[in-house]
Length: 168
Length: 123
Image (cartoon, each protein chain N blue to C red):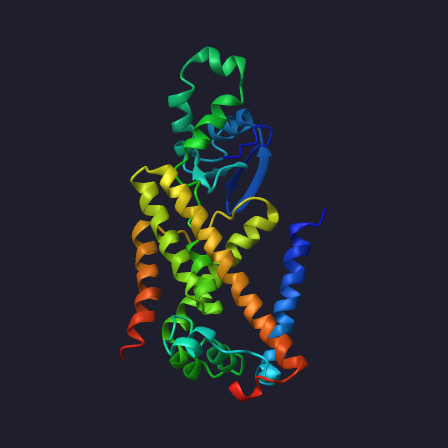
């Protein structure tokens, strides 16, 4: 998974999204009471917004060795992000949209794979989840392309020769 | 490098143009309809969405609903969810509010769409 240790944290406060700030600044904001432990925070590489306590709770478990954080201040922040359980997209909305719009059986393959993703994440089979996620993405794109090719090809044929008028 | 906003803007203009053309002409006989149904005679989960879109674009929502009841409800929902993802993609970070599906709502939604494809051929 991609992580960008240089990019900072965004945080939400009173419905606004602020940042990016460094990790230290973020902790200062919490300590000064500007934002709460339950405020949502996000940084590049994190699939979704999570509460401060959730992200930093994970971090505390990893960075409990004091020497580590002194030597490489950004590493502890990166490590727990890669363990964040929601980092694999399911592509289910995409799969459903192309199935309903492109009217094509390949879409079913995409939907079946997409539906498996969150279950596999829940049972901690992350490699299988990633594989299902990739398949869902691949078949959604195939469905979309087939739909586009069929419609565009049909339009091209009808517009140039009109030989299929009888079928309409 | 082309910005993400430009990509989305160009696609949006194309889609809106296509929808306006479709609304005014009904596709002008250029749309093939469902190839799968023409070949097999079986209705897929998306069959009727072309007619439903045409009806909805003319404000006939009740008529649109009956062309494909499940599709007419789920498609706007899916497009809304994809719109939120798209905004997150354009600005480089996701919105705090997203339509996330957990394990069971995901399987339920998938079952609904596939089951609808089966059931509509039986009734």
